[in-house]
Image 1 (cartoon, rainbow, N blue to C red):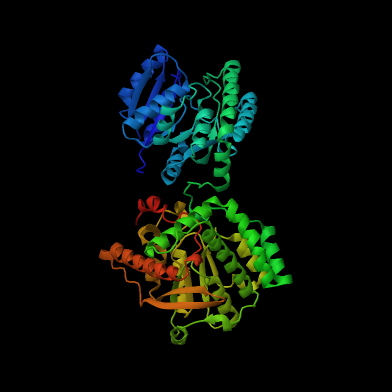
Image 2 (tube, helix red, strand yellow):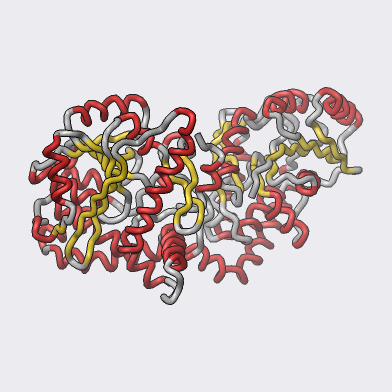
Length: 565
């Protein structure tokens, strides 16, 4: 979907505030649809002046006052007919902070199938009656959607996906007055749309004009909740299924996905391992992984998507992966966590590590040259770092993103004080990081970085390029390859895969140095990234259940491709 937004303002007699609102919005250079809901002559004259003053204003008029909802739906229809994908609704009375428009648009571009909803932050100007009424409405909306619509149900500052909205309003009757914002949110939740929240400041100007009638509109809202609650009952099985097993379409950057599991759960597994041993801890993994398998709809969907891509890439002949394979995928992740614990506790021995390329690795160490080892989230790199630290054979500096797996890393820190040794935590690969790592390389040390995660800064969309990965474009970070170019040293690929009860380390030369000449920079960079993706494919096929990226890896390519360097 191409993201082509516009602005939408319903208006009824707000002639005092509309000019300043449009003036602020005009700075964003987006078409502004103003829908006049049967306003008086003074407002009509003001709006006619706006059309002359601001070329991007598109004015439509309802012949008589039909309500805010009617005006918004008319604007949606007009904008969709003219080819716009999204409409950002904003009130005409100056309540909403126009400075937050870019935040709505950024989230809309990243989540084009979701509704981006304002989550109001009120000051002292909010009437207490309105505030208490909102809490009551949110309670009923939670019941009507079984908690699926976890956004503010009354805020009129929203970015709507027009295709879904126009399809809905052409099929069902949506209330047209003050109950519109609530009703369309519930209906869109029933249709399976997801919601993204944006905190935004909302004020009630002392001279503002409100059309909310405490008696009539509260009666309308009460009547609407009654019908929505009744309408929820036949939909309850489908809503329950979606809540437990449905796919969340929000395309959050991987680092902003909350690390699942509690500190208590992590320490329970650790305690079981220490007291009862590895076998008991492995048995405990089954109910723990089962819980996250049932409740983790996003991770489950991402796992199935990946496993099915691998199956298709192999050329068929193997049954289509289902929930059993997905569970095994998650169980393999849990097992890798136990092995990391064992390694940092000193319980792993070199006897179970097969290292066919050990001779080449020894020659690298003997040369005294530093090198970059580009790994991935395939297998168990952290375990090999633990072994290297315990044996003192090589000084390995691991570059990790600070926002990920903080709870598990904190547990490993408690297990072994050596865990934090040479662990370089960053939010992005900037010049400061390059200078620090250059010193490490010049001292003959090794730098390990993964190549299959996008950077956390800038929403994860900076310094990223899409390359072919299992038959479709997927976003890979440019950072590891640009960094290797700046460090001017040999580059190796590095994987550690579990094979039965043992592990095997794969080390292969990637480039004597990453060369990025100015005139061919992007072409060469793209080539290195594609080469890495092809080798990652090769090793994923050896152990498909050991690639631990439980988020929607491929779908982020659309958001990333617009920010190619």
